[in-house]
Image 1 (cartoon, rainbow, N blue to C red):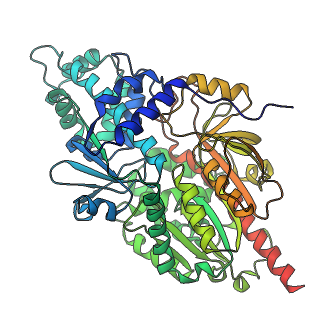
Image 2: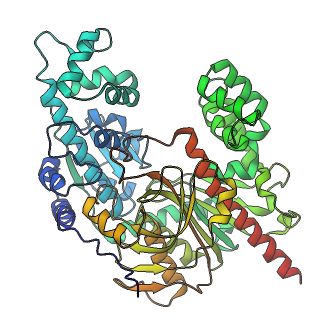
Image 3: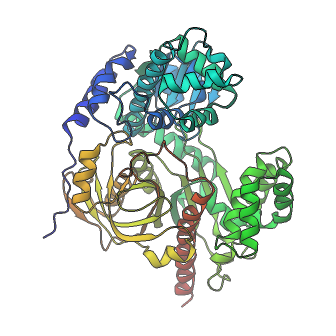
Length: 570
């Protein structure tokens, strides 16, 4: 029999995790420098150059994108599950300045004296925040020591005006011009000032975890759910389809808002003279490329709304969604996971994305089902959230999980469809009937390949893996590395079995009375040298796999609801 459970244990990573949690038990602030040695020793695949004196630009950029831009003004980071926890320790954080990171949704506030408060939804947030802060500090201090070696008379403040200064910085840091420009893109107008700050001061961050109580995570999750129930009381009484994805793709498909504003947005595109996007649009309409016109317009809508000319469409889109029975529910007083409740009966079949209309839609006005779309949670927060929902709604018709993944056998833009998930949290291996196969996704995927019958590993954190672990899991046939499927399946186990999920077992979920679908689109290929998440982004072409997976989910829900309606009429 094929071995199913990979041996993913790594002494270096286990030591790192133990060290983090032993330090965070302290009631005082902990210095990040206490973690630098064990961080470097774990040989993280995201931070392979941690121990070297050369700059690991990809690790630096990865960290910068997942921390608020104000990190240059921060001296202490405090972690807590809710505003109540912060208040109990004397921090009125919601009166502080709200700050955000570009590539990580986490509710954060900055005080006037350099304290950054971060709301955490589960232990997975700690497994994410601590390595990210440590990686940033290691690379910051490398930059600091190197910039101090600039030749006499060379001033970083002149880097944009003096080519010789720029060349001296490149030679001193021993990085490529491309890497320096990547930092410029991320920092924008603060590029020069950030380099000056790094040159003149070392990074010496401190962290304090206000509560390690598991019950506080549950209370925070209850606060999150109570807010949804308050805004949408019927959610506990109606049949429910749960989708874990993002907050834009599903509503774009179900409203047709972007499609109705095509002319206005294309006029804007011509005025902006964005050569690359305009060329892509011209190629699409002339059928020179097989890209989707709808996907392009969804991408352009966000760009347009961020401009002064298109800002009016933000409120207009909100009102359009309300009229169609789509309610956006931002999180309050706890972790940053927004939700949307979609009333299927109030949707208008006519403006739907044309790729959704694969049959009669006359059943929609008679549907009593809701879709709860969750802005995908990180790691163990998925278990807490699904457990909370299942406790209050006994009629869950389907669970559909869409998320990013690292692939050991694919390329960026591919879609992975697993039917085996090994969870590093519970050490369980889950076998399940995935509601999706390649045929559900491939008709809508232009630039990638759909790989079904895959085996997935749910890891503790993006930094908490190294080349040895990836080699072991790949040898065992696991090709899909992600962060949410395992915790979701642990909650599914408790929805269909009378006991709490076990640990270190092979669990067969075939036959579970729940339509269950998992789709992962590839954003990272860690076995390709230099191709980690800090090296590039999916950009516009990431829309291809995002919407291919969203279409598969939306079509599945519509088909299931249509069948449910006709079955009830018989």
